Amino acid sequence: YNNIGTAYYSFGEFRKSLEYFQKSLQIFNKIYEEDHPDIARAYNNIGSTYQSLGEYNKAIEYKQKSLKLLEKIYKEGHPDIARAYNNIGSIYDNLGEYNKALEYYQKSLQIYEKIYQEDHPDIARAYNNIGGAYDSLGLYNKAIDYYQKSLQIYKKIYQEDHPDTARAYNNIGKINHTLGEFNKALEYYLESVQIFKNIYQYQEDHSDIARVYNNI
Image (cartoon, rainbow, N blue to C red; front, side, top):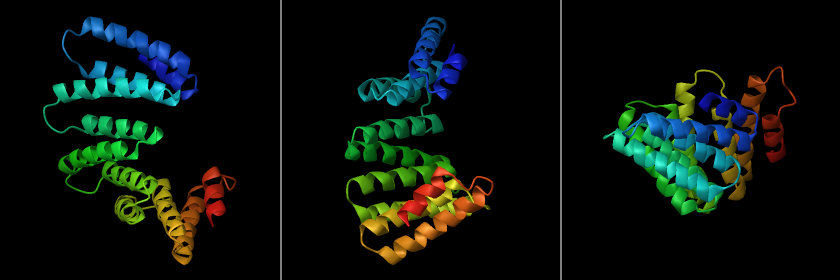
């Protein structure tokens, strides 16, 4: 049931996927007498589907259920708990509640920084999300600070050109653009577009390249 739900989700048939995720959850609730990671994942999948449907309050309800179970199951910081915080933050982002989003993104980052001793993509993504929340709040200097932290990690961990690195350059470019620092903005946009062009050598007409051209 879960796998069929995942397939429908991939096709963008969210009502169908919801139906199968709920069937999966019903069975998990019957067979596990105690809290179990599979139940938490089922709640998470249902929450993600509601988020994709734009039903954000229901999405938060299920994501919170998932988080509470994970916090019971794993006594200490765990990547699944960090992801749950991040997921809830993204829903608050959708709702335009950026202070709430920031709160959850920061909780996510705190766990990742404890778990991973070295630079890690999850830490970089958390920095990026925090930067995005500050950007939405109009706190542009803080946003740039976090976007730069994100970029530094991506440049370390990816030896070759990578879409995350290109997006980080683009994000910093957008903030500089907003601040009226047009030469700096252009510098970052040009870095971004060059990486995208290197990645999509056989797909010159790619939406990521088009977006950065538009920014330039």
